[in-house]
Length: 436
Image (cartoon, rainbow, N blue to C red; front, side, top):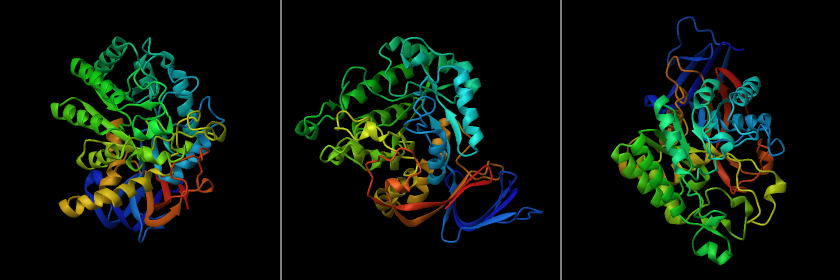
């Protein structure tokens, strides 16, 4: 391994430390040694000329399904790790809905071991909140944490018995664990496949109303008040839901939330003529909801953006809309779609307000802000920090095509789109893991 690495002449953007300047980055023994001037005795074993490029902390993705164990026909650790490297993602959090479910310490240790052997992205699993995600009995959260879990989740499975969720949150509060919840009611909208609205009615698709999200949020906040447990809300999708989150934060509840990057740009109209690539969970909602998401990212109601990377194979995607499996590939689109938000939305607000640059704000949402939620020491480039770095060209444009994606999942509603932002190099622990 190259012990000394010099990244020169790049625009270094490190929102955690308020840096946005053209400067040099020096890496020694897998750690950031210094910024600007070389540390004493530095002897570059390798260098990257980042003239005209952005140098930023490696991305932290709060939701990426790697499909192992159990769903190797959809994707493998190897293919998805390569996708992470091409997307500049150096830390990723994976939900527990594998097969078998991540409810035993041995399964978590095996996943971490297999991921570590690939020496690419750092994988941080979420443990199952209940055994088999069945919503009945709690898992041994303490043992799962010791095995490497950073939080606990039901993935897409809803706990119907609210008492079980109450007990889970009491347990989590006692030990300082975070409960990750995708807010959806157990019954309202069950079996729905599109946003309840005029479009779903016209297409004859079963709907998922916004109240499925808001009713679940009321329950979660009530339990958070009672227990004091830290809750992270995954993949918010509606304007009404975000209003409730805003109120909960104002009240001082220990709550954070994220949004899937495709929800920042798409609406239910993007289903078009039953395009199964636009079949995702939660469903794309109205333009008003989409606009509220963009604004919520800007004003801080939404803490982070995730890729919600869910690779699906052709056999499960190339079907009528209602029968297709929900999910889209996202690891390689996260950076470009975050930049698109900066260009489309934050740029307009910035002209009016004039604070941190739009690009720096977008990078914060996929680095330090995401790391803070997950309790990771990642997403920043202060001296002494682990040298996880992405070097990208913010102006380079690329077309989203199946052939351009390393992920085994080739399905995304952005197929055919031209996006800005191409990763040139991904560095993990001071080692160049990918170079275009």
